Length: 348
Image 1 (cartoon, rainbow, N blue to C red):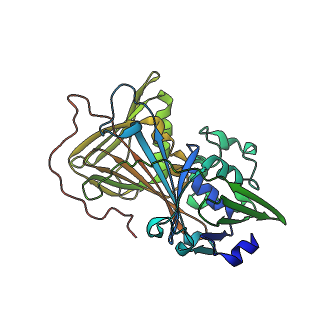
Image 2 (tube, helix red, strand yellow):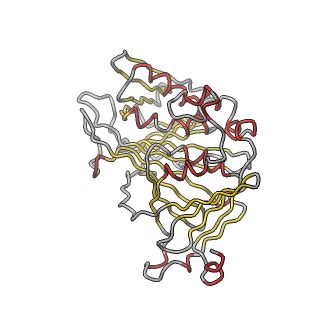
Image 3 (cartoon, rainbow, N blue to C red):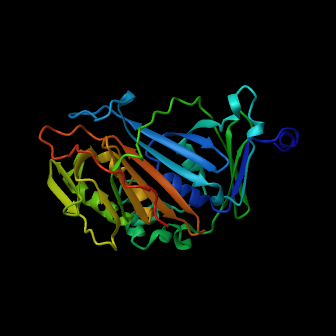
């Protein structure tokens, strides 16, 4: 590898002083087996999608493969002590030297990153959600608790290397004098579908403490629901999640106290329904994040943007988008003209 590096510059090399922080962020989207990876000058973007056939009501947006949710995790270059991306090293047969888009086994990457990790089976709370690892019990200790040394132990060094087009993605882990090298196979990228989300036509924007959403989604699971309905009203400053399942029905109402909901901007009254299992798939992000921005556009597409504050001072973001079901006849959802609420980012 050393000879190759002196002869031809590598497309991408990076070094992180904490493999576990990369692991914790990427686990937030670890509900599918494969991920698209895009390497850019600003960082590495991981994208996953979930496509399932809808039962009962059909989705409100006609998309190929019944795409109902997508997730994004972005590893900023600030997470790495050394980050080198050289677009000029990309093969000339690729037009315009666009940032490479790779498809890898996300399962394999997560398994590799946790080679030196903790034994999760030692912690009873690790299986609380059926995902293992960090849960709401940990999140209640604060967002930094997910990266507490008592949980993570000594941080290991992680190196990521992508030599040239067609090469495997090389992951090198070093800890306590032990070095492990893993080469991840690069698959021919499948077309990555998108769920259109119009940031310029928002009808709802709510920013709240993420653990409140996590607790609500967990509480609704007692009814074994297949769908969850989100209800918001500006006039009465009302925000709630409700579900109905074989074990009954449940509704969780959120307090609109500004200390809990720092932003509450809703156009009229909105009622939208989403697939519960996909919402629950974001539980890891809910448990780890300090804040969540809950946005809905005119078509009812839901965007959950989670702010994860790492103990290095770097803020990482994980995003999920969900396609709504069509409202039933007689639904209370309003279709009136609405005003745009303005900036869609977290306030400073």
